[in-house]
Length: 87
Image (cartoon, rainbow, N blue to C red; front, side, top):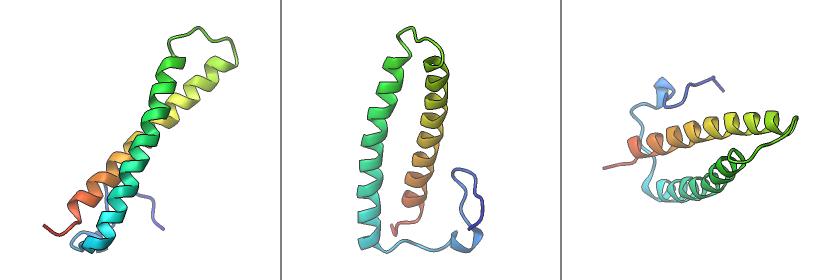
């Protein structure tokens, strides 16, 4: 497996399309992932509105970092699906 940046695709797959029946299931999973991430994003936001003592404040920073990365990856996944589904 090669290390890819969000939104990038392996060059061997650039022209390939995802079969429609597979794309439907992948889109469903990506949608469910988005819903789960929304809960995490909102919880992270709410935690950021209260004063936290150490080490909880550091844990919140770690959570926010992970949330940002998860959102980037989810966007990359959804973009990849959109770009590789037959028109």
